[in-house]
Length: 258
Image 1: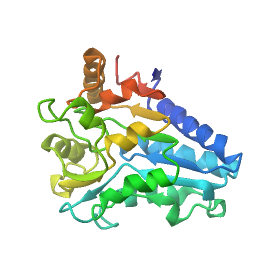
Image 2: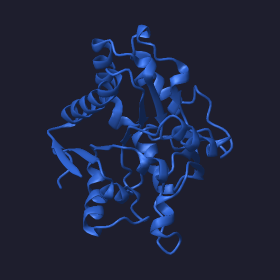
Image 3: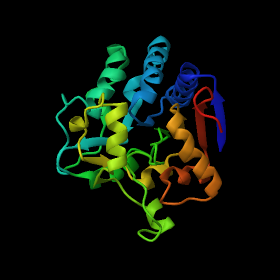
């Protein structure tokens, strides 16, 4: 585990983009496929802009890159939000990253994957069949969640069972709805869907590398709570990353003091 302070948001974004680019090019330069797990949110915006620029400058063969997003919103737990929904993660990824790739590099619509609320059980076998995730990019919720794996009490689920959770559809906690209202919905809670298809803990923890970025003051509390706990607990889902064999956390030192 590596905990790395960055001077500010720009420095964190640049460091994250460099890690993703270098890991991808390590395989792409040998003609090998690269499976990249992606996250959304304000944390990743500058990183994605710089990552696209790096790939374009290097003329990387992006036909060999497959992306696997952590989640997608659902209005009813049965279908994805429309792609033109303001908070659609499909929309976010195309605007923030995919549309910035040079079309000549070969990244096509079929290279991008999202969990489908209509058939979430198909996502994990698809990732496994592709060879597993080489690197999973992550953020952390203010309550310690990763993806939309929400905190649970240990009298509800065992430590081991929580780690084995698959990709699935679940209702969002009120705490997460409130957080996303302020961070991504410009204060309009009516825009935030009440369900999401989320990559489970099992495929996240199976990724060969995990990179978590944190840049909000409110993220300091769950990170400190995880360090104080000293072991994985369903009550702090991100705590499971502390035992991952190749985990890296980059945080903005101007906002977060650890």
